[in-house]
Length: 348
Image (tube, rainbow, N blue to C red):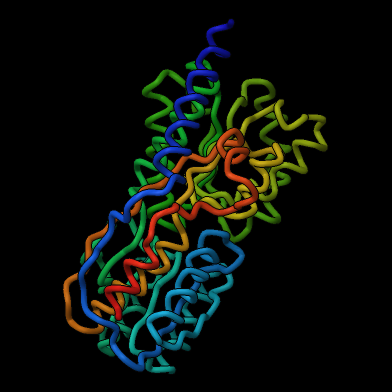
């Protein structure tokens, strides 16, 4: 067996074990078990950075599910993938005078001026992926910034690429400098690849919101520029690979040929479908989006009542085709742990 094939076999075996045993298998809930009971009669607003983003959509669905249990009302406002749209969404939220706000999937620094209005109004805020500082007391008046360890997510994706292709890989990294967390994740991807002897061919900065129009031409251009030297594509988000496959197919590459794609988050339904059907994405490092939606509601309940945040940090999972074949038809990373029951018990 060739060295590269042996590395791939060993890696696949290790990852399949870890994903099927620890990530998707039934287990105990490792989050909070105590906290304040549900505050009554509250209305919250979810400021979604862009509902076309599978991660943001998955978290929003989790919030909506949890709100039904805690007994609140929720209004979702879509920032539609633009800075102006997100600014306008914050203005709409302020006009509604809600009891709490969820900043869902955009950098708090980008909207610092607008979010200062939320702080001045005394409206508690929690966030998902609002910046590089995760957990309690994040910058910008954020009570809790819910996320997995983004640096570890990047390391897992980069380690997969190295295990898949060996130290002679040539990687193109896709990121979006609009977001500090995206820069940090891409930097860690680059550091991990290069530390193992791999080559980063190019570091492509292209807005997540423009992937539908930009990824096709970019893919064609990169193929012309690097040819066979481009062995792996790594991105900070699954959305980049929603639009890469058609260009690879048009260039005559089968899914198991050409650059192999791996995402350092977030584990969208579309990404699961591509991985399952071998359609130009090999892996994603998924977050438990639905669980994180429940956590956001719990953190906001704590903030509204003047309690301390839980400090809970969820764990990601490396999703491969082999692992998905063992899981049936699910297209989301929703760990089989009783988090719904745990949060319901706290609130009731």
